[in-house]
Amino acid sequence: MHQRLLVSEYAATKQLVCSQLVAALNIYTSNGVIVCIEDGKIPLFKGRDDGEILYISGVALRLSKSQNSKAMELADGIAAHLLATSSDFFNVQIVPPGWIHLKLTHSTLAVWLQNLAVGSATLEKVQGREASLIQNPSRLFAIQYAHARCRSLVLLAQREGLIKLSGSVTDGSLAISDVIAQQPIPWLNCDQRLRLNHPDEAHLIAELVQVVDDWECSDGSGSVNWEKAALNLSQAFETFWCNCRIWGEVKISSPELAQARLGLLMATQFVLRSLLEEKLGVFALLEL
Image (cartoon, rainbow, N blue to C red; front, side, top):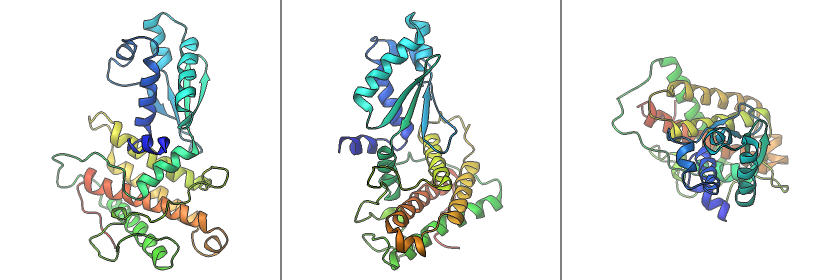
């Protein structure tokens, strides 16, 4: 329960990791955090392997310069604190010369995906956006198509009884993300590992993590190309949909996997709609 509540406090997994790092840094010195993040940011970046959601921090390397300590010793101390307080959220590994690797646990990802899928995640609203930020109309069509396709597939699953949603989603003005699943989506198997282990499932999850991280943690300088981010997400969805079936044999023999894949569609639809309306300044079409 504690894990679910804490993960739910943050829209982005990067925010969760940062919060735990800040708490760990406080064990060293009263001003250590200030020295380390004098530019306003914890040194933290996401790994590129889609097979895992891994964050890498050089906080010990930066602290070693101001604390006159060895980076590996600092990293070991920070890691010990994280293992004692945050092992439910991520696995911790120290890599020379002082990198801290933080890999999200499957249960953390499951809670985060659930929040996205049912629309309980809150992405920061854009103030004073322009009417439209689309540069390439063909890209817009691809993004709109992916959004509408996600929605139509979930509606089909509801009609066939594969997934249950509270409230009516037949009204064209109501988006999938505005309704709450009556039962938690079965993201995890009996071994508490994600059912979504196909490479294309992992890639789509990684794209979702990246978009939400950029949304919540970017410096607002315009460094993120939101049109490209939305296109990448829509392409990841298309690849997933081509190679990861929901109906047919999967629905019959592995209904929990089918439901988890539908949950991933719901999460994707929520993020695509948010990108279209908040970042790109266009209405997210419900059908094409």
